[in-house]
Image (cartoon, rainbow, N blue to C red; front, side, top):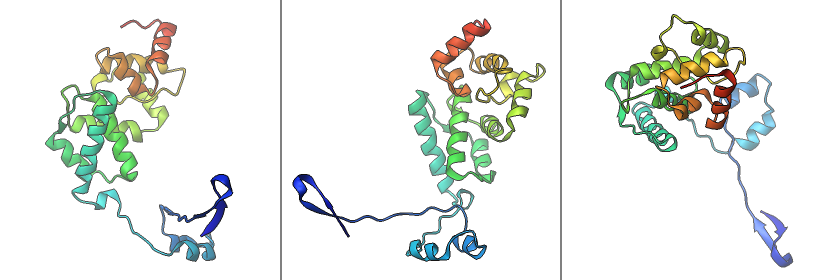
Length: 202
């Protein structure tokens, strides 16, 4: 308990606690000498072990459905769920990025579906777009021999290739500028400015 001055100088009693989140074993880093042992004992009053997403069983589907509903609300999309082959892929993926990775993959897949149902192809494209190095994504987008419908869309990052990325995003979304802007990681105004700059008509 600490005392601090409140309104009109009346002392207030304030109690606070803290939660420490670690992505690695605290004991392991203490043993390795990279974390102070006295600090470890200070914060280690109570420990909760959180299993990785890949070890949470059916919880994975609950989170995936939650993130899909959120994507539908935030992106104004009509989404009904995952196809069976997509659900199977969700279960097989190791999810090293845990919930953050799952949320990003589901959001990208939601932008790719035209029917409202996320299938395996949509998930694979969303996963590839997050795991392929940026230079490889740029090369893939620029390659004329790759069909637009099956090539991942990456956010704009290279001025030298962004015109091709914009064209590819517009093709993948059938000319929907709002969806294309979201897939490219920019707002609609920025997209319109770039369309005018590169002389791209839709």
